[in-house]
Length: 146
Image 1 (cartoon, rainbow, N blue to C red):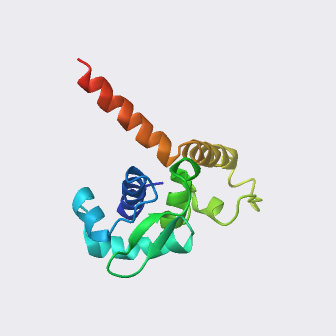
Image 2: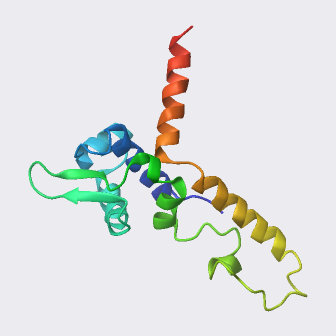
């Protein structure tokens, strides 16, 4: 499993919105400049986040984007599930959550891959955007308290 740049930039985009309090409308241009990500690339990512109801968009001159829910209610798994499709470590697990191996004699290690899949999902679903912001804030304040 490898997270694509699309997934990484989607997380960055969401964190940028969260940094703005989640309520303030932020333009793609602002995020593009702040995160050093091409505006065109963000234009490809954001509609999927809107469709997944993670982001709300407002059109017009004063429009922009904001989080659809509080940062404490959006996990990294929520974001990556939209951009990556599946985070399954092997393709046979990508089909469905309750995969029933039809060839147990050939794939005797399926429980290893199921376990890894569970670990990945549990880990990423346990980290919210707010958790990341809180940790970054804590690290920044530790650096300045020397």
